[in-house]
Image 1 (tube, one colour):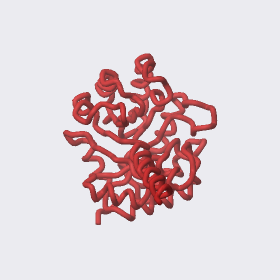
Image 2 (cartoon, one colour):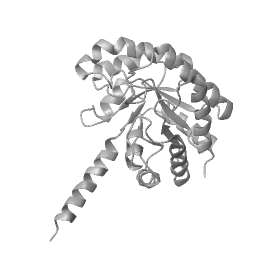
Image 3 (cartoon, one colour):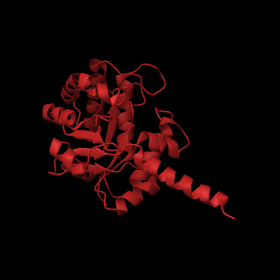
Image 4 (cartoon, one colour):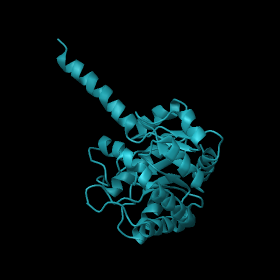
Length: 258
């Protein structure tokens, strides 16, 4: 079995490999084992998927203690690096984010997603870049005191919350945030919702960090994303939705059987 430090070292190397790291987002220990057995090099949870599996919604609706316990169960089920979708850090303050990052590290995870939007449903939108960077800085300081190099995938929700046809008008702000988050100590930069290859290429060219994009039904293929400069491809809620659609179909047929 790999130690947590060895898993982190592997996770870091995967982000520097010639080909993008592909993360099929999982939601529990069972799905983690399935994806690991299929040949995954590392694993990452998806907050919407975990929330759905536990009977909650997205947007930090799952109680923090349950999030951490669930993460520990996933980590213990596989011998792979696991990154936790930690949404906005489950805290209103930088000190709270720092403390929660220490809890995540104790769960055995080697990284987190940390987003700059406020939790869904509070009506606050996206944090000012200075505030979001401050939270990343606090997370980095806490992480490096417990597990140096802990992976922080800094996520901006700008494109996720804007219409695709408006993404070009927001791309300068996306780039500014990527630079600010790099300065604050992020390990990689996540821009979910961005699908236009020319804009993805622009973000990758301007980023000091490995760029993560979300694949989905309308996203470009692996090779096109790799050629655009993407280093990490994740699937967000789509594996969960696919699994639930299959379960719905199965259950519907069973209910209608004679």
